[in-house]
Length: 344
Image (tube, rainbow, N blue to C red; front, side):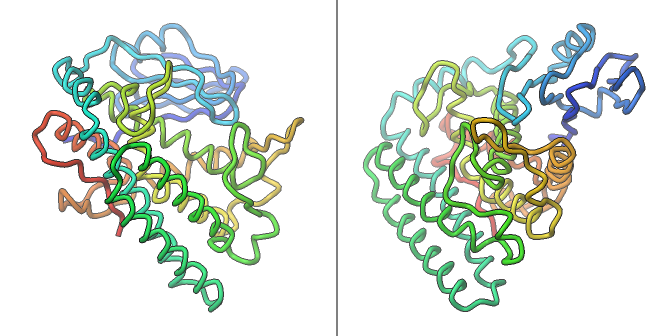
């Protein structure tokens, strides 16, 4: 049984982390701000130029706990891992099946079906809660377009077609993003389409930040079950690219990241003033807002829901791990198909 351990997110660039007995001690300006038992942690994620003692880094590696370094905007910089304990037989099966076009197509279809289905559920739920009849109709029409994308997806003959359908569905979904924001917050969070590297507005900056944390969770889950994160079935293989983690996170984007972003905005927990526009036009979260988002993400992972395949209550934070295991079963040939997580 997998235990939902906490990930320690360190957002203060002036923080210093060190090992003290069996705990991680976090100091700022030589004063203790937090002390966490190591056995409560699955990993440590640091934003910006956080400092760590060599003893702590050694201990994290020895115990198989990941250390991930992100820049201040949440972009991946580096990862420290202990000796690889992955299952070589599983990896061999993964590489073999990645050369089979039919297998790649089947897995890519399943992953994107999960993504589009979950995005459609977000639109339908927003339509039910929207009091404006015109906006409700627009959301329902967009949901119908996504249903058409799902039908087209089932008829795709190659992975490139799947990518094209996914791109068009994402465009239709993000075209409705302003309608998912309460009218009172729309002047502060105007969304003109998805952009990144760097994000050019507050909502894109928030989504990119949440996707970075989700990506890290998916990568950790895949590595934990022994899969190679660089060999994907949907995303093309490139040096240094965690293609399989990108594959896995597709089905979680709308449910775990987009909905949390919208909740924080619609509840007024985040405002336009919580974002900084840097020279060159890049927008990012300021320090206190970053801590608020990290805390909200961690709390979201503690919430429980019914897993549709396993038919048991599970913490949301365990979903990447459970889906990684289902994917490993499909790769081994122990299951006929991969079944993505479908949100209800």
